[in-house]
Length: 409
Image 1: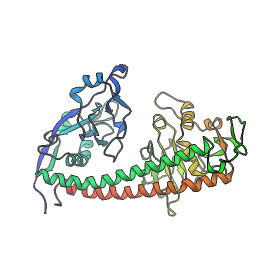
Image 2 (image 1 turned 90 degrees about the horizontal axis):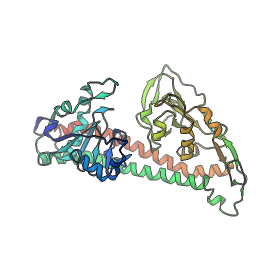
Image 3 (image 1 turned 180 degrees about the vertical axis):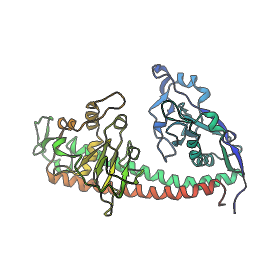
Image 4 (image 1 turned 45 degrees about the vertical axis):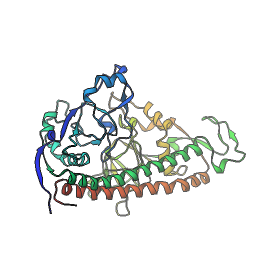
């Protein structure tokens, strides 16, 4: 049995506020008091933002006090890449590309409104007026006058919001577990291959001089170009559909790869399971976009992706897990960033930069021991990401039926 609904406008759900940004050259507005949320801080499919790149000072808070929004305010990007959204965790300022709905809690449930706005995103995108720069653009006046169908009874709204929130809570819990597993793997990498301190090396460890400084006796210094298989030739039938990964599929702080689609063609990077996809273009590299391929199947063992990926594959010297963890290390990334060339805003890493980055390569037995330690963590991360995919599908299937009152709980 369906619930009673009515049609209203977004502006009737609460107060719509468009954000702003303090002048970046006036650093007195910046500090650590109130988060400044930008579209780049938002992650598709993630409700709450972990940390923002920038925050306001007391002076900034005072200047933008009329644009601050309270905790648990639904926000949606309306300029740039329309579709990103979030809930604020605390009092925040959003930038001018974001519209927020400070919910009228006497009439509407906050979580219900958040999910209602997810349903409205296709409508928002269809109202894009465009700009001279070609970016998507929907003004505040257009956004707040969008018609929406809402469930009338607030208690019913709350029940519907809780049901959808249950799925997102499970997803968020899995994401926390993924982050912990990746952090543990990174700590093992640092312990074994930066500090040279593992159980296998703990007794009477002898360090010897090398071009990299002191390294354990028996290890060998090699360039990344020699120790890693970089952009290997991989065949792919362009007449059949194969898994494709665009730049949006890489995360900035996780190995998990999302947004995988089926597509014909074979231009761009080709990869197999175990490969690391490393963004080579600004600002994606600086932002940390990197992924570890685990999703390919026996039926489709090769995938392809953006031309702006560098593919890093295991070799006789280094395991795939080691290479991924290396690619996340600060010194590897900084070396790549410093080598970038090209016009401002479109700079790229070139493969020859890896000839001047050096790695202390351990004996193969030690590499195998390390791999056996961290490989189960990589597999667990993949399994958790698959669970999240299924949870998202279930949530998204229920979302329109619940929010539009077609199902009564």
